[in-house]
Length: 119
Image (cartoon, rainbow, N blue to C red; front, side, top):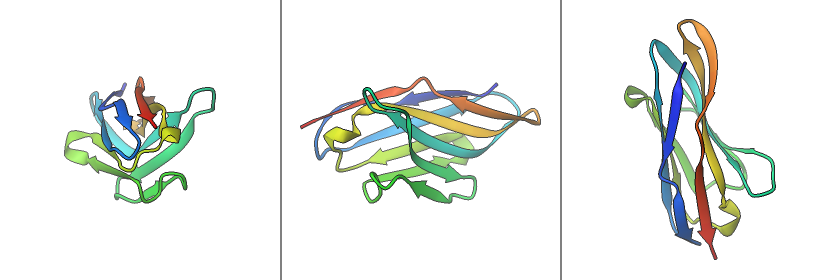
């Protein structure tokens, strides 16, 4: 089992910045892809950004140019730097990691962290 723990959420004014972190823990695992998703109030969960083991990244159109995903493989941690935040970025943000643990595929989720952007 691979556990994910997010941190860094909170309340911020529009135009502000926040940085989310997500640390993975477990034994005998290797992460292939890490990602951030978000679920706005009353809406479905949506993909925000992904990063592969080779540091290839992709972003939802709504966050391109404002958010940056990065990872520290030595720490098994993924980050999401969020700049120029907008009220529509308000959501619960979830970390996701996929890879192999003891030679079995895993797909793990964090518990989520609330981001609230005030206008």
